[in-house]
Length: 389
Figure 1 (cartoon, rainbow, N blue to C red):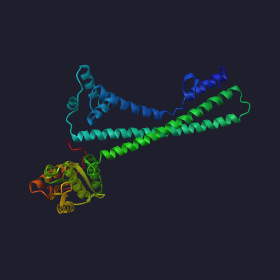
Figure 2 (cartoon, one colour):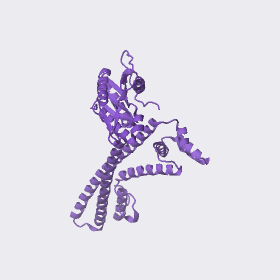
Figure 3 (cartoon, rainbow, N blue to C red):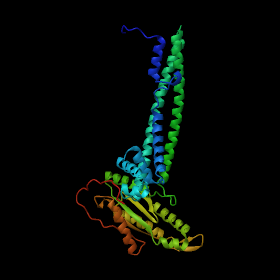
Figure 4 (cartoon, rainbow, N blue to C red):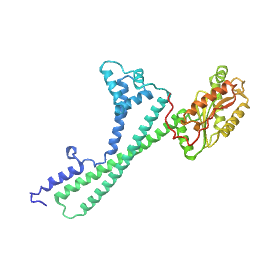
């Protein structure tokens, strides 16, 4: 202790309260330092609001592309684009969707898909971070309240408290009550975060489902394809890919109507879905086209499995229940490729597509294998980048 004159007890208490609690209005006790959760929530809300303001200010319709642009500009991920937009607005020119597409470069369905995936992943990361922050803040608030409660009990048990201890007891009680309120607020925030996380999971699953056939859609296939490549390489297993397309589907639609065509799509989807197991994945790739991934099966084994499904479908005789008019024979053609036949596994997509066209050209209702060129030695590591649109 130095020789300076000691501060009066009330002044010391005020300084102690200020250092513990921070400044508070009208002398009321402030909250303990457990505001990380609300700060994370405020940041998330601010980003969402800023993206919405960006779209409204520039009169842009809601789409994967405009959402991605808004996110990049608001978070500073693309300063070049943000500067170009600011320059265009200063020049009095409109920020249109076409201008954005031209400025960012060519885009296609795969770019839209990646933009949506990026936005979803970013939102999920923010929610996970917010959940961790609220959990840590609630734990800190609970520990803080317990410690304060212990101090209150000791002060109450003390004899001859006097004015100084009475003031300290009042401040401590106020801090305990405020901390209890903060714990309740954080607990509610945690519940809301868990609910939001569940809704995001539901939305992600819905976004990866083809609602007509019940199969995974192209978005789900893209993710599955990359995971199966990694799994097959790690296990030293073969991996085959097939595109299957319903034969003369346009004629079915034109003759029987689109509702009947939808029923045919469901039937073919169910036929192919019977192949599904933990190593075989079927998805609707778009229109009347389906994609099948077969891990752990050689080209011969994959061909036999697909050909069995093709024969099973061709043997069925289907009738349009609305008109009692037979559909005739419903068949599909398929092109089959070895994913590891080339250094870049995504080349199998083009090979399977070319084989599918060959099956159509050769008379339909058949499966054609893409030619396989044997490669000596161990293949180079596989680059897992999406195919250019």
